[in-house]
Amino acid sequence: MTDASANLDRFNAMAAEWDDSPLRAGIARAVAGAIADTLPLHGGMRALEYGCGTGLVSVLLADRLGHIVAADVAPAMLDVLDAKCRRAGLSNIEPRRLDLTVDPPPAERFDLVFSSMTLHHIEDVPALLGTLTQMLAAGGWLALADLDREDGGFHGGPMPGVFHLGFERAWLMDRLRDLGLDDVTARTAHVARKPGPDGMPRDYPIFLATARRV
Image 1: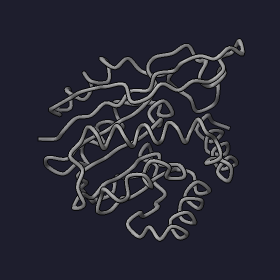
Image 2: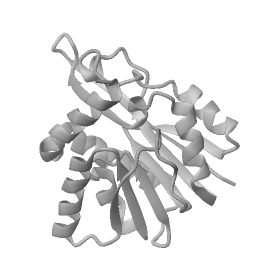
Image 3: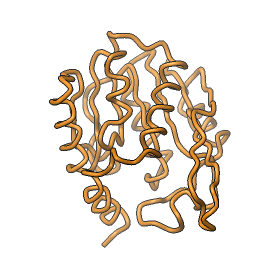
Image 4: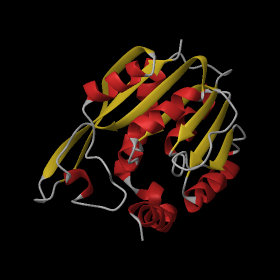
């Protein structure tokens, strides 16, 4: 079994209990808040969240955006999101299975493409960044939240499907500039606290990098 297959199986198996984690809920609230504070969101925007999981971030941004395509590789995660949207009456979130590492990108163009804690699961990050950039409409925004570079303690050691131990902000910002994006910035969105490998509480900063296609 490949790392990608093992990762997919793990996320499908965890989908039903995914939203029960205070850690994940706190990260989602902070990332959604940072996106809303940083970017000029409005109700006419068409957005894509890539790696949405159960839609924790998309649900929080739904009332600020016109339509959200919430995309993920794990069908079980999307099933949880679909049920959540039905219960809450959220008609502007469209769950969609999509794996941009193997699938062709959709024909739509988006005013906002965002992800939260997804990039470290992507083996070829520059390739994905190029694909996400191509999916932006003129003037569209890219917003990417992930871990600062760390030592592997966040996931408790090696784990299938975790290809990167966070990122250097400067490296990611340079990749966005290489793609011709403008207004490239990065800020701390959240500091997640959880036990490290030694059992002691540790802080793991999470940044939000944003850029605009001009």
